[in-house]
Image (tube, rainbow, N blue to C red; front, side):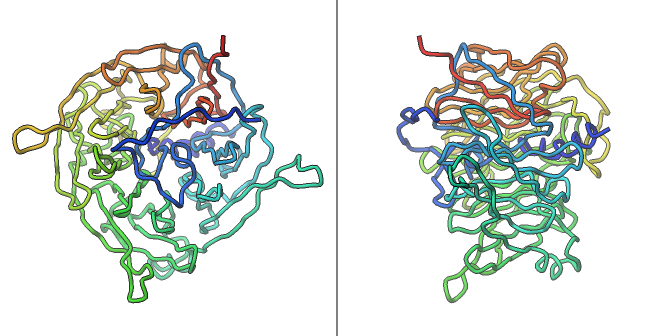
Length: 487
């Protein structure tokens, strides 16, 4: 999840709680192995929850650095999806406490003042909270109306001081669902992502993969596996869309018809993984907690990485993206903390994973099943693994392990060469933004960004802005962590 599924918790927690931009600094020079740039997505690093369509959880911007300052913005909602477009405005898609409906907040990046809001239709647990920004700075999502929405914001009025949010376009998915399973509401979209040919890819709760074509309004669907469910984000590369169900990993693409237009959804490969005997504490479904991640040393998309749900220790599994062949499979973390609900960081031949085993989520999704054991201590821990060659075979070797109790999806600043995450301390009474050396795993610095349960980052994802600001979602809104003043 939030990695990929703190999104589920955004809605569940909402139910419980109901009773002048700085010129951007130089980015890291493009080098082999960076995620491929998608021409139909917004800025690299801030257009999707995991930074880019490949879900690398990297950014080409520097972070706030040591001595940073934190400012809290209360929105009275849970904010798992915080993005930023070319115009610099923050687009936060949050779940309201009272009606559990998603609301898009356009926020001034300097003042953190909300300049426009649009309330969307409530739907399934995940409907309307996964989103991305397209190349026109429009937020693309699916809400409870069963439509793909393209939401744009623009200045309005004679002075241009006000901002409005309008529905620039929409594609109705309900007829496709009716044809596929007999009723407009027989399934629900859990996540969306931009294709490299302009298609809007999505996956559904009941294990379907599909796309909507903005040019023709065509919608295509395919069942991935009978009885399988999707509870994580999806990822895209020029090769197609990768999706993990609670049983297997898939790569699909759109076939081309005789006219050269997208046709049926084709399954390129499927690889089952060890889903274990039950859900683990600190995970939100009985299966992988990972969003699939494209990475590689040359093109940034040679491989796909996931984590499984095996006992007693989960594995990092790396597939060759073109064929689905397993490149390596390595146990991760220890017996007391081998479980993760989060997407891995992956860049070139390095992969970083963080434990969420035992994380005290306030609730779990309907149908998630009982955790075994029912409860466990959240001890945290992170690991770095390197994909390397040993003779004729490739292996994933553990390079370091630390004890950071990560309470957010970690992200790697490529420009700064530093991993950022939020650490849960003193049983949730304090939350620190920590900077970690990716080479050795040691903590470089920490900044306290909140105290008490209202500052819980709930394993949600942070987003970096060009000026070094890090935006982190919390259960009550967001925190902006800015670089220390010069001098």
